Length: 178
Image (cartoon, rainbow, N blue to C red):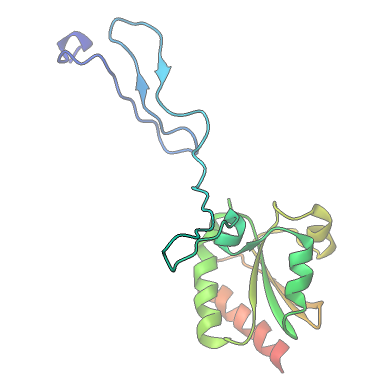
């Protein structure tokens, strides 16, 4: 089929293999004029909500995207979390890490079912100061670390996403609870 055989459409759509920012549609007149991208140059930001004082009984507050995702983004939040309970489990992760994304909901479920009294905290290594990350000896992600009385007592680097990783996390948390 030749381009001349196409119907009167003046737009040629091409889809590229998925790569962040690569999947887009281009508008190209069949006459061979310049290509113009239809994709915005910046990604849309999530809507910002403001407190409502109207008749509604629901009040919506503005929250950061890190807080909405359950991620800590400052050193103060980290130290505050360590003071919450005698034992705190921290998942050092990154938003772009596939294993981290896969493990997060599964770890949340594990802790809700088996360790409801132990806080599970998620820290984005790209959002906190590098000194906090290196000071805690984090070199790979996801690293699940157990802190007792504010000091790191053990850690596990999740090399696999199967049951072996969850079993290791269970073991180190159970040892910390003894």
